[in-house]
Image: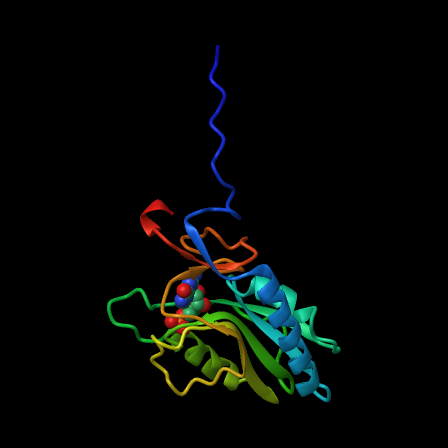
Amino acid sequence: MTAEPTLKAATEFTNPNLEVLFSQQQISDRIRDLGAEITRDYLEKDLVLVSVLKGSCVFLADLMRAIDLKMTIDFMSVSSYKNELKSTGDVEILKDLSNSIRGKDVLVVEDIIDTGLTLTRLLEILGSRGANSIKLASFLDKPEPRINKALQIDYTGFVVPNKFVVGYGLDAAGRYRNLPFIAVVKDPSRA
Ligand code: 5GP
């Protein structure tokens, strides 16, 4: 007789190795407020949300549906060199925008700002393209490791402590992006 396969003790959503920092309800309440604020601020503007792949895709999907305006979206993908011994803050564009941002009011949508180096360089690149305005919305702000202290986040979802967080688009080695909440991995050796 063949043995029944052992059922996993928990699904990913109820994984006991995850400590929830922000619940699905807290996130949707916050996004509704952010969307209302952005709607008020961009009433007379030509808004384009620029999502930085991949981490911000979940935030973008929720945020855009909370903005009650005529608007468009576009995507960019960049790789930073922050894993090298000495961080240069330089980025390589892996995927550029599909459309021109000349004359547009750009709102860059990020998942999390940590050192701020990637975004600083990205804002410099976008800044040379003739946009009417460029602002930054980040779902999470992790201020402690910030190197560019002057980086201004115009719209912030939540401020997080200096811990590695996952979920709601954010990954650890490609995993956990599908979690509908933000969590800390309690024991990374069991991840
Ligand atoms: P920065 O240039 O601000 O240091 O890098 C920001 C990028 O680092 C984010 O877009 C994200 O991909 C990654 N990152 C920074 N902190 C975290 C974190 O706590 N969790 C995850 N999953 N990614 C992070």
